[in-house]
Length: 194
Image (tube, rainbow, N blue to C red; front, side, top):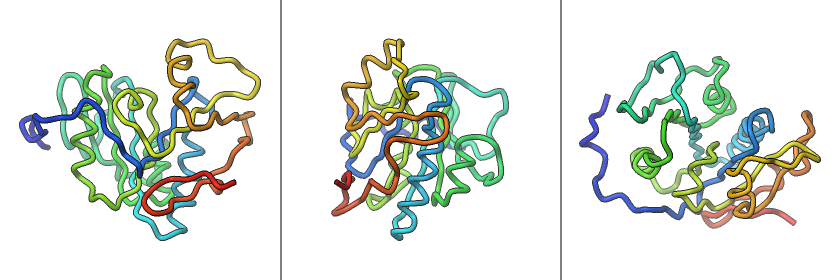
């Protein structure tokens, strides 16, 4: 496990990451992880190096096996279990080259945590990330916001994040009104195919 001093003290307040597909949504069961899995499969078919990143705003009861760093406010681990039930396991099983699982108790640590994680990858890596909070410190190449079809999200976080999204994706419990195949990655940036 790494020690806190190994994280760079010179952390920018925000990052621009053209090679990141960031997925956030109006609560649970709106299809974020299913779409992340579909996106990883789609991008891997193109021969790209894809890293998954799952950030959750709470600590799970089980401590991960492959812990990289742990503080009172956050912990970062590598997912190594392809057949587990966690979202990070599903990303790994879909073909991601590496998957980082971040548990944090406060959004104030997100810049430090993301700086740590991004330093573990080279610049050619494409990120598929599931996190609402990360949008406050990262400007991704493509930001998709997920909601249930015909439902109007009520949370303040939804009202803050939805206007920042490149596209609102609706999920009816089975299907999306947008697919991972409509995303392409050209000249080191995400585009939506017309």
